[in-house]
Structure formats: C-alpha cells, structure tokens
Image 1 (tube, rainbow, N blue to C red):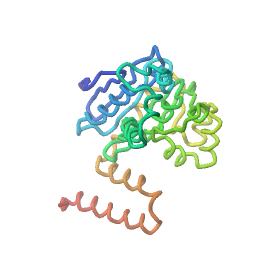
Image 2 (image 1 turned 120 degrees about the horizontal axis):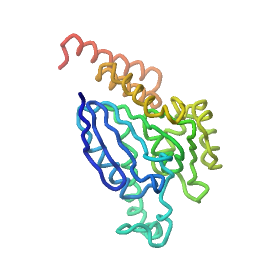
Image 3 (image 1 turned 30 degrees about the horizontal axis):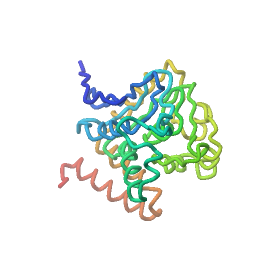
Length: 263
C-alpha cells in the first residue's frame, strides 16, 4: 500500500508525493487556474520541496482548464494585493525589472532538472503563461479538448516565462514565430503532429495515460535515466564530436557503476 503525502498547499498550488511520483496541482479552477506572482512563488517552492526519492513529477490543473494564463488583474493599476502592479514594475530601473522577472521565471525553470522527468497533463485552455508552464515540462500528454495559445505578443508583450526556448526546440523557429506572432489556438491533433504533445487522448483517459507513462519512466534504472536526460538536453549545444565524447564519458560512468567500480 502506497502513501500519499501532502508536502505543500498554498496560493493555488498543491504538492503531493506518492512513492517516487510527485504531483503538482494548480488548485484554482474557479479562475481556470489563472496565474499570479504568489502562485509562481509557490511553484518555485514546490520545486525546492521535492524529496530526493522523487523521480517523476506530474503537473496538472484542477477543473476544465490547465491554466488560462496570467490573471488579468495583473494589468490593472491596482495589481494584486501586496504586489507591485505591472505599471509600477515598468517604472522601476532596468536592474529592478530584470530581477523581478528573473524571480517569476524560477517557477518555470526546475521542471527540466536532470534528476526528475516532468510530465504536464494538459486539458482545456493552456494560454500564455499556462502554455509556457506546460512547455517547462519534459513531456506533455494532452486531452482532446486542449487549446494552446501564446497570447503575449497580441497583448504587446513577449513570452518571458522561459517558453521560447522549448517552443523553438520542439517545433522549429518558423512555426514558433507564427504561433507567437498570431496568438492562434493549437488543438490536440495539431499539437501531437508538430511535436508539442507526446500523446493526445480523450479527456476521460488523461489521468490514466499519465499514470501509465509515469510507470514506464520508472521502469528503467534511475541513474541511467538521469545520464540519458543529461545527454539529450546537452545535445543541441554540442557539436557532433562533442556529443560523441559526452556519450563515451556517460557510458563509462554507467559501466563502472554497474560493475561496482564507481568512485
């Protein structure tokens, strides 16, 4: 019998852990899991709170939408209680504004750590910041009702929550530019076809499909998955010869470990 432990539950984010699988859930379905600076801080805290035994992290949203993006309250003069409004932020120095955005980005950066594999289970709307949050994960399983859209450019902004790099890596520059500049919706069949989604399933099968994928990921030895993920993540920035070298070094570590000769 496995145990399900709640590690964190605050500001629209809940982290639970069951054996080697952690689940991060966005818990404000009444607002379609709209995002705020408080939610971003809670997501960053969730990443710092992961037990070392966790190998797979599932990201999901309660209700009909994964996340409809940034809460529009951010664009009002009042902003969020206890937070500087975007208008106030724009009045700050370049260094101050850069530091605030960097803090916001921390919610989106830890999902690709080499010691975990992250899966976004995406249904309904995944708009703007919601799209970028799904892109932060290694893998995406989507329901047939999914609607991805990068709306920032349409609002006079840019995608700044780390979404541009994975988007270009997945679909290529030209398609990424078209997706961002038009702000159009991408549905399940297209998402799977162009590489945004690893798998598209009926909505009622989403949770089961993610559980099956998590189980398959856990079947391989942890250290082999960590080394393989590191190789794949580093491949785009290496030359072919450098990648060959990295493969040899990684395999040498694995062979020594399996032979009981690791340092």
